[in-house]
Image 1 (spheres, rainbow, N blue to C red):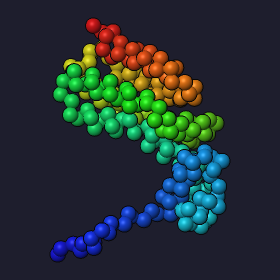
Image 2: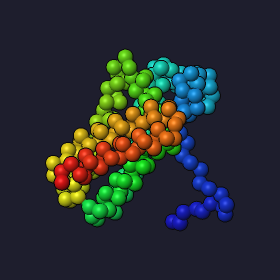
Image 3: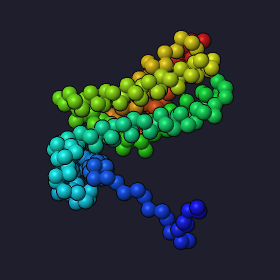
Image 4: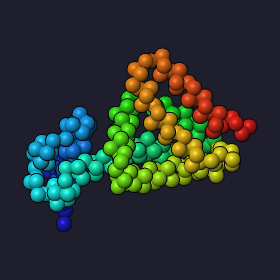
Length: 214
């Protein structure tokens, strides 16, 4: 039986979000727009199109909803750069191409345009202070991200593109810690400082990954 086709010019509608998903999505939008002060109960319920009972059923409270939204933000922004790296790595065939890829990814990861993603992660980490449950969730997510980074750098080492003494997990942790530290450079809002910081970190990265073992 053939599938019915939409009239020309019409697009298939996106799947409707469940009440739980709609609440999380609305909360993330509010967080992105103005941080936690922008997360107001009435606004979230209105945007999600659900009743208060739905929020309390799924999350227990508004604070519980904010925690889950922060977890989602942390996870998606932590995986963003990694997903791009994994996609490009699939086509790498030599040590030269791998170094070119790491150079490209370095510029992408630390670009000023990625400030929003960095701030989202910092925001989630700030909320986790004194919140053991949220901290545990973020820790689990980060360990998973670190495992993926380690696996990909380990693949390059196995292929002979990196020295066998390179520690993939330590390298991955260093890169990610520099990404979060980049927030302070963003806040300085000084193009010259940005260029000097980038040059220093890039030189350290090249030495650590390629030159210190020669």
